[in-house]
Length: 184
Image (cartoon, rainbow, N blue to C red):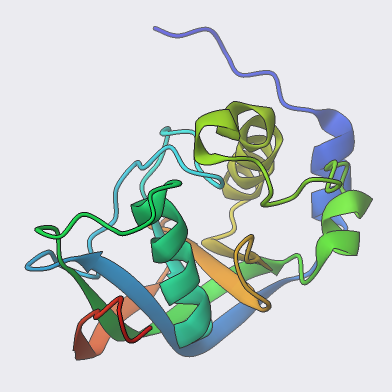
């Protein structure tokens, strides 16, 4: 049995002061062609430390494309030619989301935002530990998601905490097809 997790009490206090509110809206997500766009998993990304399943989405089509572009290109001049990604429009209903609408909101809960989104993919360890801690604390406090600034584009990303015992809903509206990077 793993030792009990010690959480940052100042972070928990700051997050408890924020409203947890329902969210209902359209979001976008890109996934490898043929994969289920509503499938949650433990990605180990900016907002999850692999202790619970999440679904990364963006509140704008453009942000979803920029997020995928960053991870796909990873410093390469052109993306891998055999790997295809499909863009989906989804509808999400959350019961209790925490919104951190901008970098100031992230700073207010103790995140260093000086280089937010600027670290190379290989240097993510300089940036991800605190954001993962924030997400885990939100999960611990019962939120079923969080709205946070996209690190790649203006606007917000919606991170869904799929393992919460709430009435959250994730439904596919439609596929927008395979992404043509030459046109995007």
